[in-house]
Picture 1 (cartoon, rainbow, N blue to C red):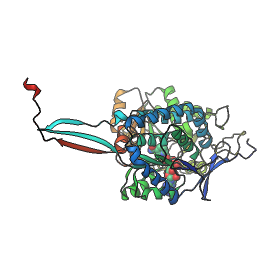
Picture 2 (cartoon, helix red, strand yellow):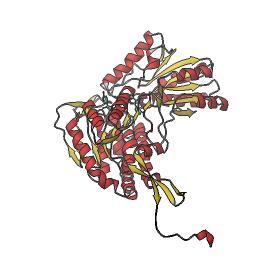
Picture 3 (cartoon, protein in one colour):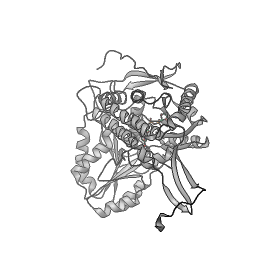
Picture 4 (tube, rainbow, N blue to C red):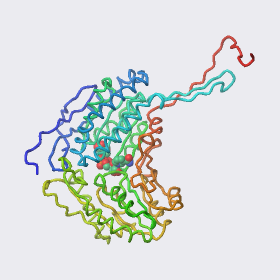
Length: 500
Ligand code: NAD
């Protein structure tokens, strides 16, 4: 148990290359969720900080836009190296302010690193098309040019990866950037910003403003902001999309999710239990690609559930900020843990059955941490609250269906469309599923089919508002505007080599 109050970590804004303490008195506490201690106070930046950051980014844009793509890429080669050299520090920061286990934090930073690596390829990613002699004596070419000031607004659950989904590629494309990280996990973003400055990025090209809604609203409406990348819950994603586009900005807004995992009777049970357990309880269920609902088909439930319950009960919950690592860490805040507890209690009153109960988990060496054990709720019906709402905690719903048709129908009734997976040994069932399921990322015997840097993160329906997704070639399109140049030269005759 922690006894001494930890010294608060500084939480400055980063504007025009300077780290600036906030004059605002209003702050949000940043917890170490493992202990319940407050480790920093995140300042509530507003219109003044946003304006200063956007103006700095706007002023830096012409110089950065005109820096050759190969030189911009070199900054990211150096950044990649610095992130790798500071890997442990970054992972410990993620783990301390978020509560992920160190191994999960490594995954968070690693996925981010892959996005930096992708951005290093910017000279070839920005290739355009050409067609010579499109008409007689006329050539045509396309150029991908940056937009200007781009903005990233990020959630708490991947403090390294989600900001890194955005700013390396946006900057490599020649834009400048303002990041508004989650007020629950600002410290990882600060460290990422420090390393970017060390990599030699010129002042003003990248800026950080902390805060909540007032900062976000100032960004959404600022006339010099050209594009907004958002990741967070669906109601806020929708708000960002509607407000940003109304103010003339290009917006990509990833929302929440409810992901369905269909288990066929012929699935390999031990591998499926392992995959389901990771999908549902990894990162304490706080991920948008968490497999939160298992739909068992026919006899799959009887084959699967005893082992799945045993696996859930074996998950060791505990603090992630010390050398002995647990299997699962705490939830982000006490308020969030209470919300998850409430959803499980409501499911019970609505008639579902708790077959693995993590509600009374005890962590004697960190009694003030925000813990909840792995929980499985069986007999969940479509009309129950738990079936509809995103839980974002270590809770797996089980729904039982007679056949694949009904399982797909059930999954497709969800308002969300982020991920879906099927576990089976049947190629025909897998094929049927991948063609008919209504989700942007599909796994076949893969529980968390989250895409890597070179593929777009393709949420559908209420999981995404916009046209061009984050990551991959779609993101290059998002962060650039296309120019088509049609050329004809007047003058002397050009010799016809073909006649010789
Ligand atoms: P959140 O929506 O509460 O916050 C996300 C961002 O929006 C934060 O920066 C926050 O400061 C800001 N914000 C919050 N309320 C706001 C308001 N009223 N007006 C303007 N801005 C506001 O999300 P969270 O709790 O930090 O993160 C969890 C959510 O993010 C889950 O729903 C999860 O599914 C989703 N998520 C989605 C993806 C994806 O790619 N689809 C990835 C990660 C997380």
